[in-house]
Length: 159
Ligand SMILES: C[S@@+](CC[C@H](N)C(=O)[O-])C[C@H]1O[C@@H](n2cnc3c(N)ncnc32)[C@H](O)[C@@H]1O
Image (tube, rainbow, N blue to C red; front, side, top):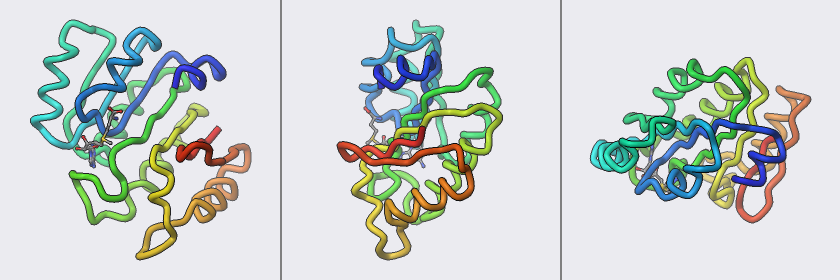
């Protein structure tokens, strides 16, 4: 995260899936603004309390697919996105196979050239209605020709 922030000169981090706020805590001093979205109210409230004194950090409660437009509207520069909201098989709002592609489209269609890192790329199996890494790569690179998609260490990177 630090490396991508530095490489692309990004000062804002957007995370989906706050959980216990460990990534937010680790990146607390690395970004000027951090927005994180958590679906489970108890986890979101816990993180809101944890980061109550950090005025540059904001925790949103809700489904990332629904909250994302609100977060995108707050951005005035390109940001680093860490998509870690259990798109395939974590607690939360499951059963919506379109959530990942909907979020990717929103972020890539926004007015800034954001950088996206998606955790657990191994979940892109290409089975049971789930896209494969190749599907995602071909779709993004066809629709957004200036973008490059690659996977390294189980993280899909859209630069
Ligand atoms: C792998 S954990 C996140 C770990 C965290 N990013 C970190 O690095 O410490 C996944 C989190 O995503 C949340 N989640 C699942 N579905 C979600 C959704 N639709 N919107 C927002 N958060 C969701 C889960 O409740 C869980 O807390």
